[in-house]
Amino acid sequence: MSTSPTPRSEFKSKNGITRLRGAYRYSIEGLKFAWTNEHAFRQELLIVVPAVCIAIVLPVSTVERVMLISALAGVLIVELLNSAIEAVVDRISLEWHHGSKNAKDLGSAAVLVTIVVAVLVWGVIVLPLIFA
Image (tube, rainbow, N blue to C red; front, side, top):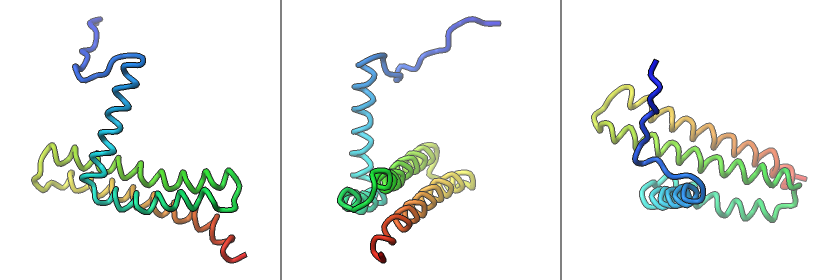
């Protein structure tokens, strides 16, 4: 049995505050990239930001407000993950491949499911306010 340590990637961040600073910087770079290069992310963000503002002023409980905002954040999170999957697939090859298509379709399906959940959450919480 070998007891040699696992090789450490030169890209792996440091510990402590250095790691936190690096993680924050990478996250901001990812958000900037998504805004600049991902049309779907921009579209969703242009819906999410006003919707969050609406959720803040709606006459609902704190738990309902958190649910409304979390459902919207979920859409953005899954869209970012879908974009990451697409970037990796495209990095491997731009040639058509059934496995690549499946990976991209599954990512897209995850976004769709998240949007449906967000619409349901908003419908269940907001529609009774409108029709009360």
